[in-house]
View 1 (cartoon, rainbow, N blue to C red):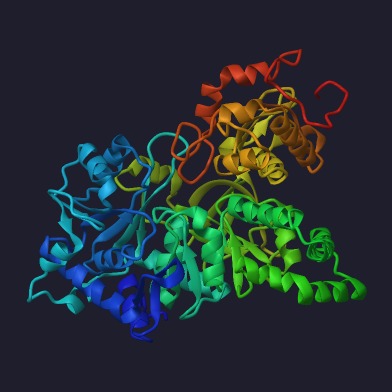
View 2: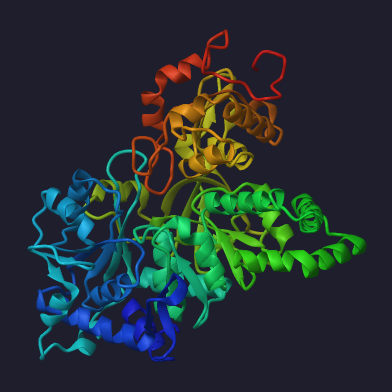
Length: 605
C-alpha cells in the first residue's frame, strides 16, 4: 500500500476490488451505495465541481448530518484536488463567518435547513449546493453534476493531486478563542491510515458506523478515510439516539466511541438486567454479570484468573455473555476503541469482563488524529498504548509531551504565530498534554498542561481524572467541572445529562423533566450525592469532591461551557458561575450546595 500516498489513489484502488459490494448504507439498508455506484458518483461530482472552477488549492465546505450522500460529495471534491472539510451543524452564523473566512471556500454543500444560516454568515458564496430539496438560489446535486464538461479529464485530475496537497481542514474546538484550522496533507493522512492499520488491522468489507459529526476528526479518520484506504463498509447514523439500533443492525467488526457512549452502553446493560421481568432470566444475567465483574476486577488488579474462575467465565460466556454481546451488536468486533477523553478504568473493566476488550487511543487534530494505541491483546489498562510506528516522542522539562514525525500537521491555516507556538524549529509538536512514558513505551495521559489544579497546599491534581471518576459512578451526570485551583478543597459544578432527563423523569413519575425541576428534586440530589460519594472512594483524599452544586441548566455542545467535542471551557465556566463557586466555599452549607452521601464528618480538608 506504500504507493498510495493520496486519498484519491487509495479510493480508486479499493473501489475496483469488488464493485458490487455495498460501501455505504443507511441503518436497515433501505438506502445503499455499491462501490461501483460510489465510484461513478465520485467521478460525476468531481466533474461538476471542476465545471464550477474548483481545483487544486480551492476549498469546499460540507454541512450536513451523517448521510449516504455525504460520501460521494466529499470524495468527489478530493478528486478535484480541492481541500474538502466539514463544519459542525451547530455553528452559529457568526462562527461560520470565522471558519469560512479562514478556510477561503466559495462553495458550500449542505442540507436545506442550513442554507439561511450559511447566507447569514455574511461570507459571499459563489455556489451553495443543496443535497436534500430545492431551495431558490441553490443548485441541486443533479444540477451540479450537469455542469460537468465532456472534455474533463477525471483520471489526469486526481492523479495530479500530490502528497503535499491539503486534503482537509479540521477546526479545533478551541476551549479559548476562535478555533484553529489544522491543515492535514494527503501525506499525513496516508501515514495515519497505514500506521494505524499496522497496529489495529483493517480490511476490505470491515463494518463500522458513522455517528459522530463528520467535522470531528475521529469520525473522518475511522469512517471516511479508513474506508478510502481499505474499503470498509459504513452505516450512517444521523441521530445518536439510533445508535443502539444501528449496532444491532450492523454488528460492526471495527468500532470506536467516546467514553460517554461506552458509559451509556454500560448503564443500558445494567438497567436491562435490573428491569428483566422473567425471574430465571434475571438470575442468569445477574450471575453472568457477577462472573464478568470478577474477571474485570482481576484485570484491573493485573492478576490472571485462576483455572476455576476461568472455567466459570467460559461457562458464563457460552450461556449468557455471548448472547448479551450479540444483542448489543458487539459480538463480531475485531477491535473496539475509546478516545477523545480519558475513560474510567471501571468502564474498561466492565466491557473486558463482558468479553469486549477496548483499546484506549490518544491523539489530536494536530497529529492527524490517532497517535497512540495498542491492540486489545497488548493494551494495558490506564494507558493509551504506544506511539504509532514511525513517530518520535520527547518530554519537556515541565512534563509536556512532544511528538515528531509524519503525522504532524503542516500548520494552522493563516495563523503563523500560533503555528510557531505549537511547532518548534526542530519539528516537534508541543501537544499541551502532560503524558508519562513507562519503560515499555506505554503512554499514560495525566491532563492538559494548562488545566492542572494546584490547590492551596500546592498539591497538583488532574481535574479530568477527578471528573471522569465521578461521572463514571452516575449516568445522570452529563458534565462535571471540578473546582479547586488555589482552594482549600475540591468542589464540583454538576450538570444533568440532557438525554437521560426525560427517561429518568418518566421512570420516576416526575411531571417535569426540565433541568431546573430535576436539579431541585430530592431523589435526583440523593442519587448524585451517592454517585459523588462512590467516585470519591476511587480518589485520593485530597482529590475528593467535598461539596457540589447541581446547576438548573443543560450544557449544550458549542455553548458557553463546552466545546463541540465536549471539552470543558474552564475559564468561561469559572467566570459565568463565580457566585455558585464561591457559595461552595462558604463556612456554612448554603441552600443549593450539597455534600456527598457518605461525606466525612470532619470539616473539608
